Image (cartoon, rainbow, N blue to C red):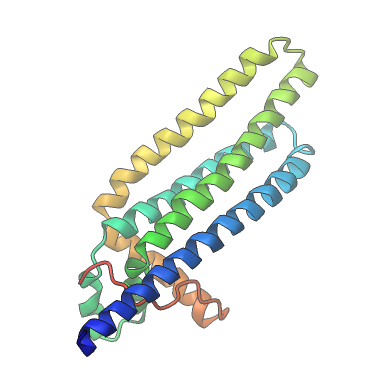
Length: 204
């Protein structure tokens, strides 16, 4: 085996190990976060009235749609777009390239992890609203109210993501550049590096 082939083989093994490690880490963190968020959200939302619970529900759905847009945009974007920016010393471009190169992980986190957490919180908010309607307004058909509430949450979530998907695909570069600014602030101001360097590339 030539030195070039050995190097490629080593890089492929490193990438594979890195991907396996990422899967294990994200699975564990999703498990921990889901349980923690479920406990905390239900504890907090129980003290809300119907209006606050409904406002919280809308905010959580919007939050989930926002991250879903980022997750879709990062897979639709092309890192070549940001290379010229990086060549012109635009600092955000470097982070934009890292976002696109980490497309799989960014998408997994935004669409799956955040989506799961938002689903838990919105479900808790919906349950609180149903309980308040039954206890404070004397509604007796709990099953019917629960079904309607589930339908409302599902339709708002799916509808919001459907609108966001078109926006994410059409404006992917602008969305990634905006996200890159946030990532840059986290890195330079707060010293939080959310995007480690990878040896794999989305576009070669």
